[in-house]
Amino acid sequence: MKKQWRLVSLVSLLALLLGGCGKAFQSTLIPQGEAAKMQYDLLILSTSIMVLVVLVVTAIFLYVIVRFRQRKGQENVIPKQVEGSHKLEVIWTVIPILLLLVLAVPTVTYTFKLADVSAANKKTLDEGTSVVDVTARLYWWEFAYKGEKIITSQDLVIPAGKKVYLNLKGADIKHSFWVPSLAGKMDTNPDNANQMWIQADKAGTYNGFCAELCGPSHALMQFKVRVLNESEYKDWVAAMQKQDGKSVAASVQDGQKVFQQSCAGCHAVDAKDARPAAARIAPNLANFGDRDMVAGIADNTEENVKKWLKDPESMKPGNLMTNKYGKLSDQQIDALAAYLESLKLGQ
Ligand code: CUA
Image 1 (spheres, rainbow, N blue to C red):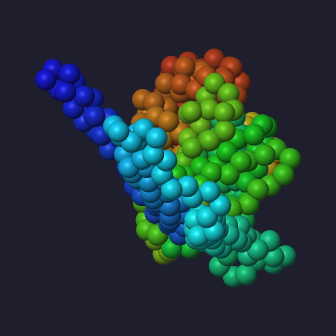
Image 2 (cartoon, rainbow, N blue to C red):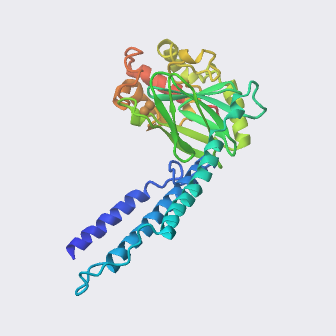
Image 3 (tube, rainbow, N blue to C red):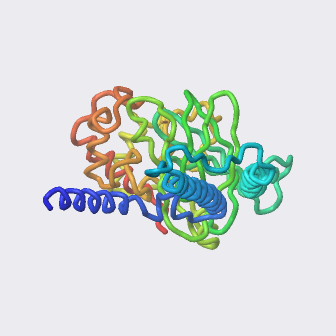
């Protein structure tokens, strides 16, 4: 009895744990857009076929074991031999061929659909085609919106219901772009651009990850995909295009001074940052106050910003900001944090 209880509690604990995996903002099993849905359908189709094969083979196996076991008094009876039976040979050749066809047709069809990025490769993009250059760096993400001519870091903002084409590159080493509920992962390589498209059905925030082991903070190399309704997206783009980080409230001008002395060499607060991609070595902070997260992993509060500025290494080991900006006094850090949080679009 005791043993049974142990088993029951173990199974329920497992069920509880696995239940926690199913969140719409980051589960492959709860797809939130066209690409993810196609991949999910293939997953279900292939798993179902495999389970069916296992069940049928197991059933036949068990039947044979029981039906043809040696029985008392019949030790010398040999059942009818079926070697070379044409009927059986045909059956077990045709069934796997049919199963493979059922698997192959949708797989090949979807593979071509998912790989179709031709709209992003036209010399002049069609009106309304969204293309974003994604650059992965140790340990953060940059998104450059081609048509809109703006840049964000850590938050990829896209309109709902629309295909968004991504050109993926790694600036230093190999990383991998993954937003589980919107599409399968794809590598970001330093020497070639990979392309994919994503699409989200409805507004919301989806979690993104680096899916290629890239160093001590690989697991902390996270980002968000913020999906806005079409009209909200247009407003957001217009506001970003105006965001130059210059005009700030009098109360945060001290922080702005610290920023210009210690941070502006690497970080831009101008959303249209005109520097070439290779020169943009640190995250663009134009809409920092609007982000959900600090460093991609901690809630965006002034407390966490200060913690990050004081000792980035303690939050993200191996990051490239550590020791880059000299020692700041507590007063400077307070001012800087207030200034950074004020960088909002005011939407
Ligand atoms: Cu970047 Cu793992």
